[in-house]
Image: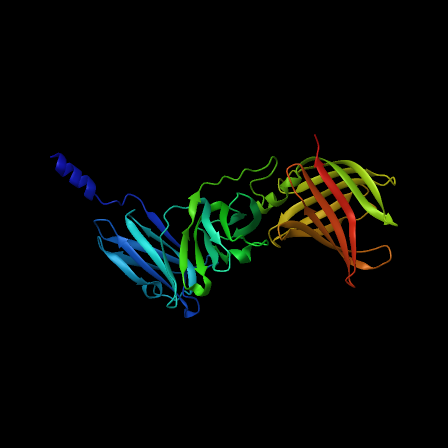
Length: 394
């Protein structure tokens, strides 16, 4: 009797709820690549598998349904299994069973091949445990926003010693995919061996591939999921772009030593407090300045910084206390080679136009440096036209 009960339990079909299976990337690009799929129905009943194919921008290329008998396997190149043209993209499959077992094989001409299982688990973070960039191996990866809402991604490049050497922010539309070589994504030189960690505001999935020179060998690196909960600083709105985190190192109270040149190699120096906090909208960072210079000048006013998702850059504005007589200045900033840089144009006291580059560097939890250099239209430079050293107030 007990044997019969156990047999019945073992053979009960698992179709209590729909399961989703994901292949984060496929390609037939230029006819050089092929993606081969093997999909086995491990259940004891025929399964109807609903397939949706998306392009890299998240738009639906097409939908179809596969019928797969109990214990049967669907095998073939994706370009023959799906009834519509799709050179690159990703796909999701939905079935009333958790007993689908699938693997994708990627091949380049008659050279390297590699294989990877389909993904069932998505989360708000994924880690690629080994990314390579050396004379023999180069790695790339695909990460898909599997949700129906836009996602903000924070992509970290981590050395083997644990140091985060670069951070890149990306926004993905619903169902959109980020696919790139690691060396093309980051501003800094990608280490010979590294880890890439992606944190997202939506569910994501992905994997990496490492290519030996000439694609003679290909190694698949699964994206390992983890749960990431964005730890927002005090005052930051959950609706703020995730890129806002790029400048939250400025938050807090600071003692500032500031200077600018006044001629003959002499600089006008000063000191005073600067306080940075989020404005009421929870999106804009505001810094209040109250710095007295030795010349008697008073740097009094505030600046604001907010990330503009439309232009994929920061917008900064300086508003002096005497704004009625001194106009505001609008500045655009972005991350360049791991350093935040603001750029604006102006005219010096002799009427010569220049472009100003303000760099924020040597950033730590307790200090950071800011320096502005001018580049004139004839190529000559004026170095350190503004310098400020920030030290966190005790």
